[in-house]
Amino acid sequence: MEKTYDIRQNARPVPPSDAMDRKLLAELVEDATLSYAELGKKVGLSAPAAHERVKRLRQRGAIRRVAALIDPQATDKTLLAFVHVDTAGWGKTTALMAIRRFPEVEEIHSVTGDACMLLKVRTDGAHALEQLLGHLYATPGVKATRSYVVLSTYLERPVQAEKTDDWPPFDVPA
Image (tube, rainbow, N blue to C red):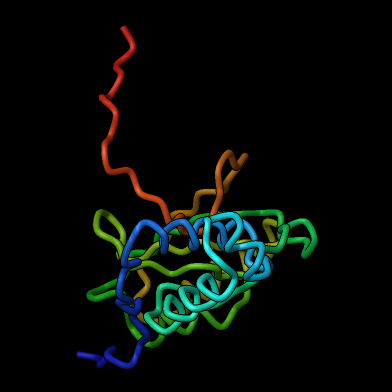
């Protein structure tokens, strides 16, 4: 069996310690360019207190990095697809994980269900998606793929700091 322990796993950061940390994270998700003075004003802290808390959030791994969210049209990557990958045996092989070298591959997930892996990819069209699928099929162990091309996106956002503590009752239409 191939060793896969060197493939990066999601780090397990310490969660935010309190509601103030969640408020800070929520504001930073919306605009990570805020000064500490602006950030503090939004959450009710002084600039030095906001700076100290953000520093601790970074040290604990709650903030992994700061990045710009790019409009896909600005890079001509307007075709969004999700690709289920079926493999023979365990899917997370070094050969399969090498697909991350292509900038069109935005996410790679190991999943349960009828597929081993789920990829989120963005390309400049059907031909580029076909080329990427060709590379997947050339990967040892890949048996099949199922691609789902997105027609419209109604919600796409980064991880949110808030969470639902009290779920409302599920409304079933009459």
